[in-house]
Image (cartoon, rainbow, N blue to C red; front, side, top):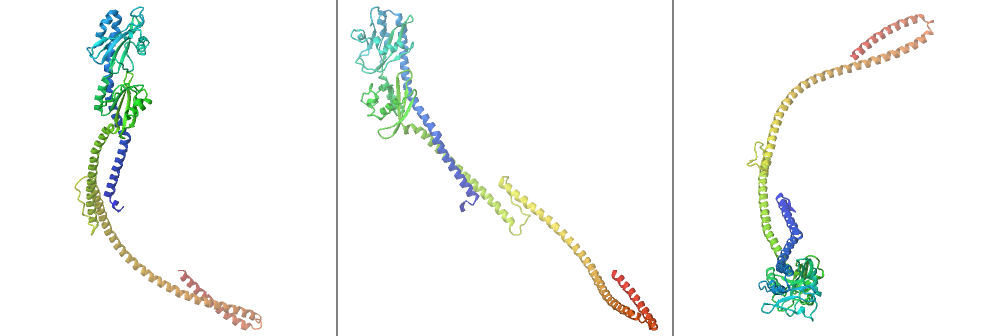
Length: 500
């Protein structure tokens, strides 16, 4: 903790801690919010690329549907012989190999009264030439108008194909489907037209797209029937069900699992490859068809673009953070150096004689320079205050000198008064002694008077006997009385003096 006592150390540690927190929160945020979105974006890109197959399939089927619309609108206007003559040209499409064949399948007794089965059907032979096939018109064949594909086409919306589930027969080396479209005449059902499309082009689409996405792709039906082979494999798995092959391939087993939880939209699940790595599988419908498209890619490869983006972001952010940290440390060190210079200048001002006339050198206008300016202002204030104190001290010294002179005069007066007081005290003491003597004399006089009164009482009894003695005694008493009165007057004068 001793290393964190300095501002520089604390601020640096705080900044480093803050940046570490930012990095942790950034990594957490990327993992929780950014990575899932990037992964979802990568998944959308994968499904979008795979959807190109759907678009190509829909494009091919749209051509077939447009061809079927021409047939269904033209056939009701033709005679039976014209149908047989013109139908190969309407089906051929300039020898397009994907179009295996096509025909018209009227309802019983509509094309020819009294004839239940009167269809016209052409298909390609081994050389690619269209040849007629009358099997469905033979007595031993099944009633075509009772087949599911015929009923589906008859009940489909006007101008829309009802695509049949994939199938394969001896007539074609490749599995195929057909577009069954209703034919109406005068507002009434007339029959169904069909165009057979081979599904061999699925394999080319799948092979090309697998190389593009570096993954696995398969086209299947909703019941698990496989419509495309595995590129590079000699095994023929078309028209087999995924439930038969699930044990042989983790990819097919994943498709089986996805079909079990298939909803109306795109399904997503992960599975383990034979090498133990995880793959992500998407199962999506091919709009307007009874088919599904399964696409799978190694999960690490699927997330590689997201990881590349995050790594690129990290390689961009980490150097920026390091540069920011270095700049912060350099700036903080520069600031601390300037603060150190400021501290040294302040220490110099406060050391020795503390010369208040000196000032800190201020060269700029930033916060540190403002602190130096504030210190200079404080020193100037101290200088003015010291000058005021010095001036006040001189005035106080002069006042004290005057007070000292006045104190000397007052002291002399007090000494004189003290001497006079001592004299008064001496006089009072002497008068007090005199008063004490007078009091004693008065007491003696009173005692003498009391004795005289007693003697007078004694003498009264013998007045009669000695009148001469009495007269003489009266004279003596009068003389004593005169003396007492004189003493009384002296006592009054003494009291008057004491009263002063």
